[in-house]
Length: 183
Image (cartoon, rainbow, N blue to C red; front, side, top):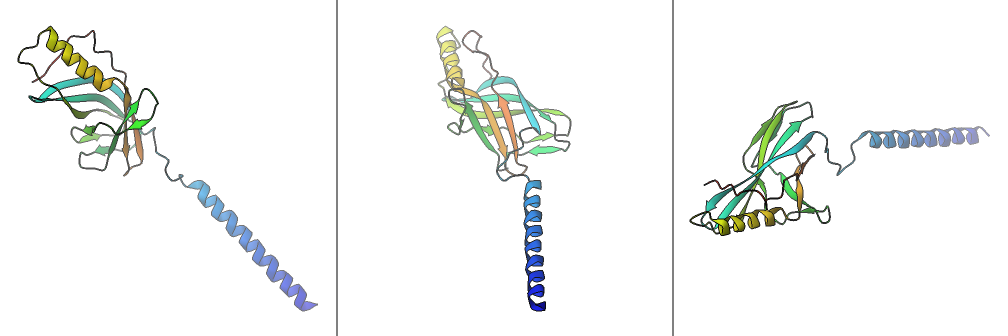
């Protein structure tokens, strides 16, 4: 009978140990940030403008300007050589799209609690006229409107910090505004 009590105590101790270990592992898993979750609250963005300029005689550089607000409590650096992923958010579906190759125009330092302007840029085919007349202005507006037709904004993903920076597209329709061309 002594052997039975000894075996029972060993089995109970082992089961209790396994139960405690399982509970400890489950608690440790709960305290970690789940894989694949992006922090979309650390940095916010607001639309500041669109700039179009001639990159060469057959192309236009279309730049979207945004003001970033650093709410993270730590300084933040966006570099052009980093592994940033810039995607467009489509109006029609809300989906993310990498159809156009938008990129950060220059490195940006964003101190904690401050705002900094960034520029996302892409190149679009556009034959620049020798003179900006009514027909040329219509072509210019058409090119810009085509660039933003199904674009609701941008999202920057920074794998190093796991930040997701939403850049909403609050731009006005270009059809009724005069063309502004920078050479």
